Amino acid sequence: MPTPLPIDQAAPVPWWRVGVMWLFVGGLGAVVIASFMLLATSIQHADVVELPVNPQIAVQNKSSSPALQARNHAATPAP
Image 1 (cartoon, rainbow, N blue to C red):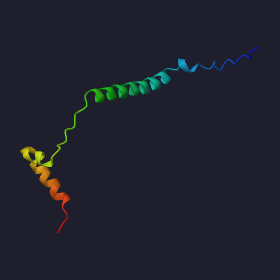
Image 2 (cartoon, rainbow, N blue to C red; image 1 turned 180 degrees about the horizontal axis):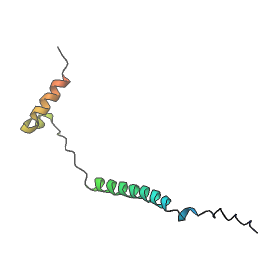
Image 3 (cartoon, helix red, strand yellow; image 1 turned 30 degrees about the horizontal axis):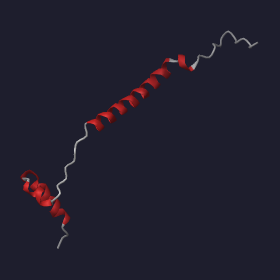
Image 4 (spheres, helix red, strand yellow; image 1 turned 120 degrees about the vertical axis):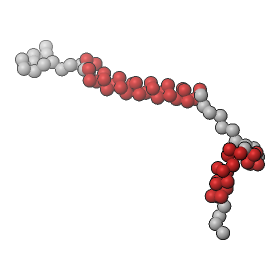
């Protein structure tokens, strides 16, 4: 027979009955679910990377010419 608790001491509450614990676990669970949803979205809608086979093809595109010139200038050693 278990010993009775003193009148001024309440019985311990099981962990699943504590509301703050569910707030904490619910927040962590929401973050995990959201991260998996973000992963699925990023895999389904991934951007295709198109690399030119020949570097001269990229120079023909006038919109990327300044960037290519700056890259090539930065890659050349100083005299």
